[in-house]
Length: 156
Image (tube, rainbow, N blue to C red; front, side, top):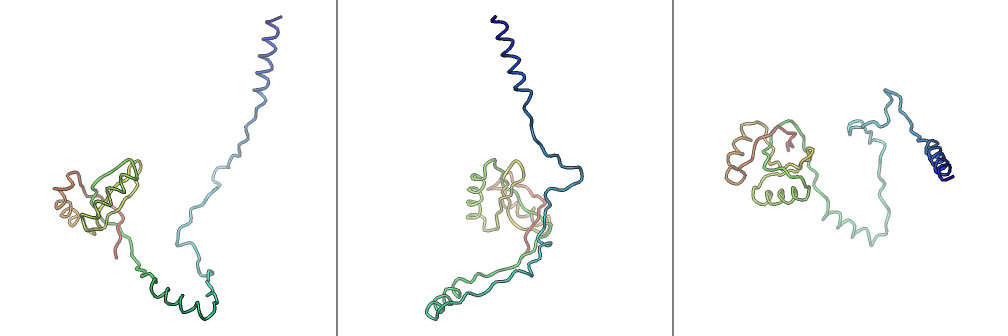
């Protein structure tokens, strides 16, 4: 009798497991689910802002505030160039700390770039490799492992 109950239990267990179905939606080959959109493809001409109307007393305050806080927007272009890499870290927090220290001592633009699996600390925007190599040689006392890397740079 025990064997029949155990056999019956095993049969129900297997039958219960066999009826499980997983639902998956397969995407046909060649069909795109998500499409990457570049900033050049976005049409911003249809976006507009209306100025809010306010009473006279708050207008003068807002005008003064706007004059004081109007940001200066500089356009910068990017191009292929060189930077000097001074370190690489597993942790973003460590990389940002090292970048802050470098900003304080180097007096040049310092960037943290994530290139899997490391956060890399890179310095400068050099148009040619010769300038980057000269700067790397200046850093040799402070950053012994520094080297020149090709990178997208910011040209102002």
